Length: 453
Image (cartoon, rainbow, N blue to C red; front, side):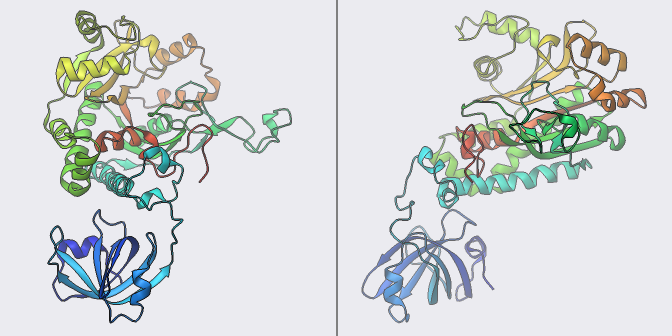
């Protein structure tokens, strides 16, 4: 039975007989001995295999190409070489899959732009391997966090007839001939449907039965944007809590971000050290500061005043009633607060219909969590639980009530204050790795004109 290389390196015993499998990273061959570095994706370093001339296929081993797949039987011994504790003295090397000199990852370093053109191979590189290992561990940490707090894990629909944000950026789902007139009565579901932009509305229904729930699944936006922060397919974490207000929402978000920062530093130390050394100098200290920080709270109106008094010239205007841009968010978190900060109670005219209206008639109980380097990382709100206020707001915004009859029903029977937030998983991975482009933190990114794999 094979053993993962990470397991051997973490708890190796000299003289242990073992079998490893993996792919060749490098080969150095001499007359009497060959050194083959094998990596199986479980860690950064891989394991050096020492092949002596007594191996029956020694000559073939010396000619192995980078990327070849191997199964190696051997004995684990302490390495005399600097920089590695263990090496595997091979008794048998089986070549499972050859790789010739056309293998695209021959050089040690490639640009991220080039690697995106070979997304089917880039997970074999150190950087993308570290990103996707961290992504996997973070996903497990998300579930652990909510399980420890007795949240119900809910699966909300991927195909939906509702546009949660009202932005009209849905990918349409249809069985109709694209060239024929659109008679949705004849369509599979008998109405317009699309891929979900959020599981929030359905999540609210479940919270009103189970109290605390969360969703963690794929979401889609048909937004023709080619920025480093946008993708057409991404994953969202969306908790929803019944009998909760905006303060409870912010408290959960703070606890969640701090938990994930600590988890990354403690449970993914090797990969995080790689990011600190090769991707963003000072990343470990930046994440550590957030993990240990007290998250500030600031009213939107106060934030606008702080920006206007700053003396800084911004590219986008700063006025009450306008949304904050990334440059404003970063200034507030980096210059004004010097750490994470929640901006609370935004103008109602720039926020969604479902957010709870405040007594001032101008604002809603919305929040954004801003962190240094990226600005907004979490957005949430207390939801409008009062039926009359909700229907009035929908009328004001021109939102038809008939398609959302089921959502309004939740306010008719047993309604209660409730709140939730959304965290884009890829944004989180970008923040914790220092990676600058969302295309490099998801294995097969979906962006305009790119869906090759």
